[in-house]
Image (cartoon, rainbow, N blue to C red; front, side):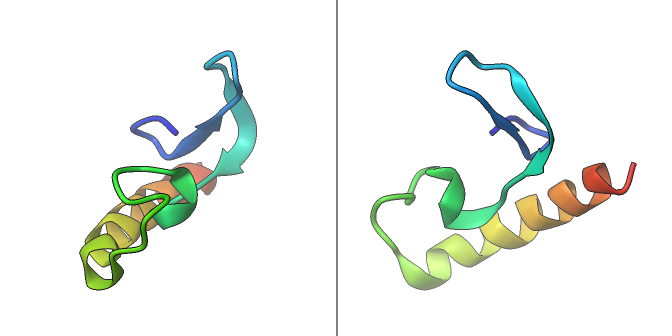
Amino acid sequence: MNGKAQVLDTKGAVIPGLYAAGEVTGGVHGKNRVGCNAVPDALVFGRIAALNAVR
């Protein structure tokens, strides 16, 4: 995932039309669910993903 919440393929290229947010992205806590610590990350990148998806 990049800063626009776009999903990247294994070569680092953007996969058109695919966005992700929260623990599904792997992030800091991707393999270890930390509960409420992941909520701000999901909310922020969820908003970023939504704004970019509608563009």
